[in-house]
Image (cartoon, rainbow, N blue to C red):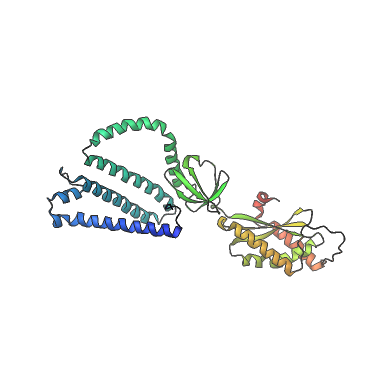
Length: 345
């Protein structure tokens, strides 16, 4: 048997929308009866007194009164959440605050509905509340983790530790914040995997959205290539590479020779971008430098065994040598230098 979760996302969406529309129609019908019932059925009719949740009459029909409570309080909670959502849409942290308030309103609506239903069955809710007060004191001693989660969630939102949509790293997991709940927070990585953590466990968090991310790009050239000639070519075209990658905010910048490897000389470039575009920028930089080197006959090494293969490399002229030195000197002073130590290699 196929469960609801096993259905396709499109089918799930259609079913969810259908159920939502039906519930809204039922709620609308209920409020039409509640408002116009005194004229349709008469204010003193038993049906209308059962339908009216504020009627103090004791001869109501129980199942109608229970349905009335359900429609009234659940619909009221929904309307309040929509109203709060509209107000918070103008706030920067509105979505995170909305999630917390929505959870609170939802639980409160259900709790009120339960108490009113018990009252409909003539249960002494006053005595029940007094008993719950004593019980809550006992349970509270064992519910400290729950209280910690709720308080931590409030601090996360109001201290702006992170917001819905931010990309963060927590316990080695890099993902986008999808929901900040009253107890837990949900993250999603680039593969679509979700991680759910209690708010009180979010002690060490790295928010990658607060600042631009430094993206390194290391490209190798063969030992026979003239570094000065390559640097002169890069100087003439590095602005074009930046313009060809719209996600780059700053750069790219040339940082020099990062390694003398076993098969080639590694040249390092860096650029700054939004964290969400980090991997795409890295791929685009690799592509652009490969195209640039191909266009100027700059060889990129690859693993091979050479018995004897004489190779003729282009030589550097005085103009390229001067241009190379000017370029290296100017790049050393650019503002991406401060973050270079984080990406040694």
